[in-house]
Length: 478
Image (tube, rainbow, N blue to C red; front, top):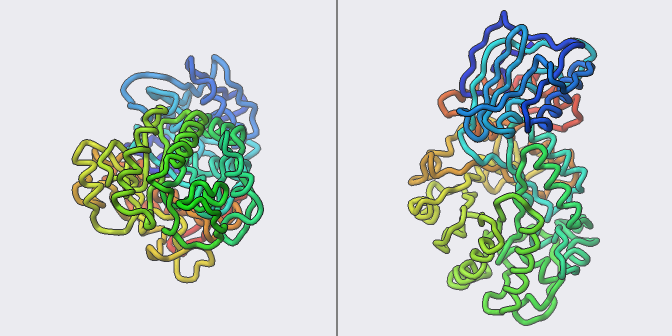
């Protein structure tokens, strides 16, 4: 049986009481507070899978979900006694976070009683935004594959899924009024190496957003601009400077494409896309990219952002962009991605009261190779083993960007070298759990020796769940 604190991310406070264990037997049921039926069903489903017992959701259950003040937006407490399990939180999101802790304390699957270790956990996240990015533009992943990915990341209290939907090599989201975006740039021969086709219809995207929301994951859509737009210009040559068609690109090069800042057709297109994506996305964020705009002059880049960032607000969303967008000096959440030791633009943005999402490539980019022999991935930001993904502090990574200025942490996964869901899983695990603990747990309770021991127990779980993972030699796998 696992110890009460043997979970990832490590909880803020754990008080084990080994003699107070609770046994889940054929008579166990879950009692839901008003407004928590969906979370109760998630919990009951996990208990059924772990035991084979019926575990109904009814009014007499010994496992009780309670809503009460004092825990914060996603915090919770978990108290395990011989006669009851009390899961308390201020919000359903907090209860769902507690359910992920309970899931990790259970066997993966079973046909008999299971035991929860006794004691009390009090826990809440360090940062509000804990995300992972999946690149659908360079290689398309189907809705079922994205759903599988969501299911794999949820146990680690990841609450944002950033979908990179457009780039030079492909356009992966249907946009009303602009059908050639997906007919042409989501069709055969798209993606790195020409591995397409594939795109999400508006209905499929909405279904993914709802699926994620049911698991308290907010989808953050990205439409990259003003660079990374070759796929859009292939579909609609009127978006180029001279109105002439450009050839499709299947390589890994970056920085060569740009929307035309001085053409009104550009802003008609951009507004249509932003309006459509905002309407399909109930979450608060819309990511406009903004990175590697080498083919756009600095003056044009700022002019473009001054036209486009207000459009994001017009349609009710909070703009996020790769940290180059801080040059606009307008309200936007910069996402820091480079390996530099400092960044004046980001520091200036947070000095004005803004916040930043931390995604330094040398600590969080899941597409970096684990080691020199890794068959998948790139190495421009260096090699990224599990210890390196774990051993850093987002609040000290950039001068001038302290604890309050960090909205959260995100682990991007670019797909230039990936060809399957198994590839995605292998590059994600076991590094994402490390980054999830960086984002959730207090810095003072994090410890590499403890983490690698806890991480080792997930190997058999991932195998049983059919999730591919890298058997890092840093981890004493169970």
